[in-house]
Length: 357
Image (spheres, rainbow, N blue to C red):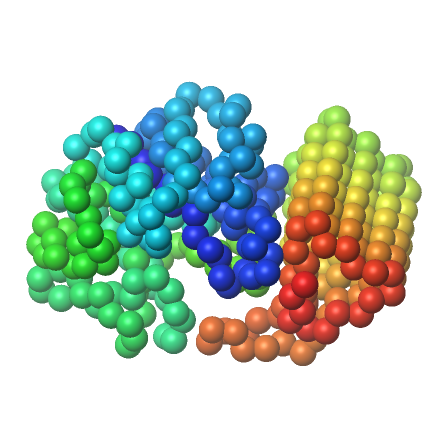
């Protein structure tokens, strides 16, 4: 069975960050966001992938996915508008009778995808969908109510939502939500109440780091370089060739990526992720933040609940604050700043809570 992964959306909830970088290529614990969908489906037995993405996403995906083993990947640049257009672009490449349609911005365990395929194989249904229990008032793609005829798509008043990956027939689909609802008793669903995250806003990236690190154990590469005076706490992952300098403290849960550098006396804590080739200067404190690949943070900076984009440069003595907490989409959430890829933040800058640059 083939899989179409949709990875060409505008990512409006992450603007202006997403103006420069396709959302699905954001790094999360050393892997692109889309890689969680690929690995989950691969675990479920899928070997042929069609990725529908934008022009800005295509090049990065080709670079990052060229070494994937045991699977084939066909990258398609999206020509038609919206989700329905992306599905049509992907369907033109499908040759099997049934196909998986997956969103590339979902973070879930591999068991989530295995459960989908098992439900399809055992149910004999034409269409299978996972349903996710969500908080009342949370807006997402495809709220649903259960009826004796199947599912009913709704815009409010439900605590169930479509789970972002579906087994469907290889047939013409004019409007995806209408298509699902029209299947009636030919559609089967299962409830997935375990870990699952739809990444659409800055705070979702931090929540994704937390969700994935909770599943991890301490893992320190033999190829990393850690000073004898550094302090490494529990549930810390340190990848190949990372350098932890004198008196630095990594207080887990935390992730330090391949070739990353943590400067003297710096503190990395509370579900932070410093991705590959990122640089943290001396005397910094990084809390509940994501430092994307090749980003640089100058000495004596304090970043809280912040995303620093790929190749962005944050000057010395920069402060981002997530206090006070705000209510976002019905949830209490802390959000410091969203710093777009390749953006430069001057020395000594203080960014107010919720800043987007």
